[in-house]
Structure formats: structure tokens, C-alpha cells
Image (cartoon, rainbow over all chains, first blue to last red; front, side, top):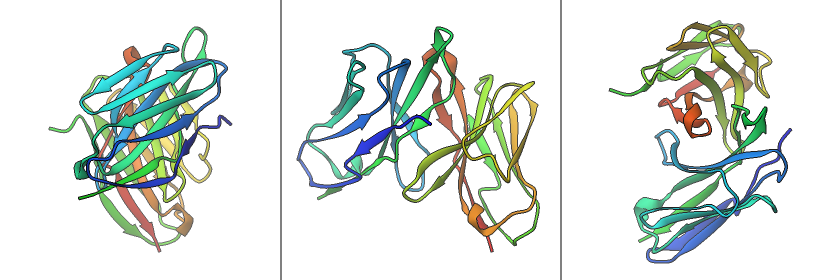
Length: 116
Length: 113
């Protein structure tokens, strides 16, 4: 069983604060690391997928970094807004036969609440 | 129109009943998945299918079965529902060209009394 852990489990911040969360994953047989955003009463939506050590991705105020050697990824939100309130999931795809194994293992998520 | 659809969206049933949850997709993806979500436990994989003739158990397949009727359709069945199968169920497809990025349906909320 692959272990994907996220911290913290929940986070409350004020509007305008910057914040970050961590995802740790197995550092062996790495293929990809995904981040998803999951708003209440909706389904998870993909934010980023990263495949190379040192990858950095950015979408608006949200960015992510990847360290495959030590098995962690950070998600950053700059200047949090109430509409950023959601659960942020990371997911690990292992390598198999030189390509994606095809299965993702999800972390439990970080619940972010941004207060106005 | 949504790319991944699930029916029903909500279902309340009784212990021992047979239930089928259906999933259809128009994304043209070969790979489809069923997950369940329980509070505090994240998304857990029930079954996955890489094509019509390839079906595999996930980490929590006991008590469930699936059918891949076509590339676009993947159904999940609970042969004899029990209360601890009360959960939110998601169907997903994946894009192999982007490391199996998952595209989720809207979810089915199932309650077993």
C-alpha cells in the first residue's frame, strides 16, 4: 500500500494571507504527482500534474513545487481569497514498465477555509 | 454537457438490496475508475478498468462488482447493500497523455439504511 500523506489536515486563514500545504509520497518508482481542488458539493478538479524533479507549476495565485528525491510537494496560495476555500488533494502515480501505472493513490486532503 | 455523468445522483436504499450506480463518459478515455469517499478517509479506489476487457480490483473491492459495458460506460454494483457502504461514490476517467489525470463525475450519494 502506497503512503501519501498531507499536512495539515485543515487550515483556517484570513483573506489576504498566503498559505502552503505539504504532500509526502514514496520517493521510489515515481511517475507523477497530481494536485486537485475539491469544492464542497462539487467533484475534484485537476490543478496540476508534475512529473520531473524540480518541476514548478503556477495557475494564477496557486503554485506547486516538486521534490521527487525526498518525496514531497508543496502547494502555495498567495493572497488567499474566500473562493479558495476547498479541500486540496494530492495524488501519486507510480511508475510501471516505463510509463504511468494508471492508478492514483490519494492523500486525505487539506481542508482550507479562508475567512473574509 | 458534462463529460462524465453519474446516475443516480442520490439514492437511499435498505440493507440487503441490490444497487447499481452508472457512469458514462464522452471524453473518449479508455481508463475508468470507481472511488468512494468517506469523511476523513479521502478517495479510495474500488475498481478500475483500462479498457473494455480489462477490469481490476482496487484497495476496497469487497462487496462491490463492476461491469464495463462499452468504452464509455462503467457500472458499479452493490449486490447486497450494507450500512457501511453509505458513502459518496465518484466515477472518473483518466487521460494517459497527462499521467492519468483524473476527470471526475459529479458523484452519487448513497445511503444504506
